[in-house]
Image (cartoon, helix red, strand yellow):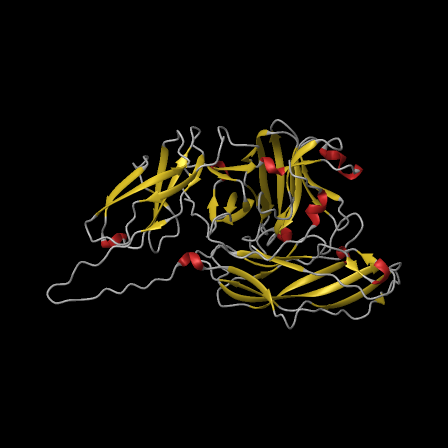
Length: 486
């Protein structure tokens, strides 16, 4: 078991760039296991008058929208940790007892699930909110979802062992993460539901939707197996036979495969029907030029055990007769796009004016402007994005004096964006208030772009507001804001 503690839950996160991962088919007929990387597990969507819950799988690039019934969320054994000796966390079990925890800040070795309403538009729902409920939780142990305030204290969102349903109101344009704590190994079914009232008074609901979680190893997962494809030549002539073979490393007794293809112009991978063996043969044609192929290996429970990297088919033009000719093929590799968040290195310091007593005389307050933040998205498929900020450590001042980062809040703004980007400013985050949390000590959305949008360059800003207790020691204090784009 790794030595892990709750201090890790409050550490900053690094800037996230788009990465190129093995493609995953969007077929609803297969069951996909998500065990590492980012996913909007509870992705609330609204279309044609209906509310639905989906899974926005961002573990692949471009992201894929899946049905919850087709996904297993795996909490790896590496997520194990001891309940801290802190009475605030007694709801997790006795101090020192073992739990399995997916943290609210990203750990690259674990799954990072959250909930998402960034695709929902303003002025559609009353109060611009939807209600998200945990209706039922079944499994061998207890399940709790909780965030933490600027002082590390837990804020429980959903808890399975003290009476359900539990519900929270989530504003539109929200992208949020929490700690997911499980008290025992095994299979869990968490049933979520989203409800809302339209501005015309109509109530709508997704109804109960089951989500499958597995805490621990997959059944029969004695050792990891990788998959590759052999047999793809550099180039084929029309009517040549192409034979591809899926190769396991190390070789196992598993022998169930599916093959998938994606040709230029297609956004999703297509299952190649009738192909369930390790080899796949077909005839090369010009129409198949630049198509990609992927193989997947399945275990006895029809769960994906390994996914190959994609291979690309190149088919030459037939020789022109009479005379001679040359074929020149140019392409732009759609997998090379990325998501980048940046600030001008010469314009990255914010100096707030000296704090003044407010009109009530009970707070020191100051305000200023965040320096411009640039988000550039060049990824294919336009999966959308969310840019967030957090100050993971306290403001530090003279003689070891500090104050919580939660005392700083912001009002995000979109300063500039390209045509059709659809970028939306994040919600206002007020400075910390006792009992209700707040402030930038927790991750907060600066701006976001919905699915099928966001490609291009946008510039974000925010008005900053600092509100401190009057007993705060005089002096100059500094802290670092960490920016993240996913």
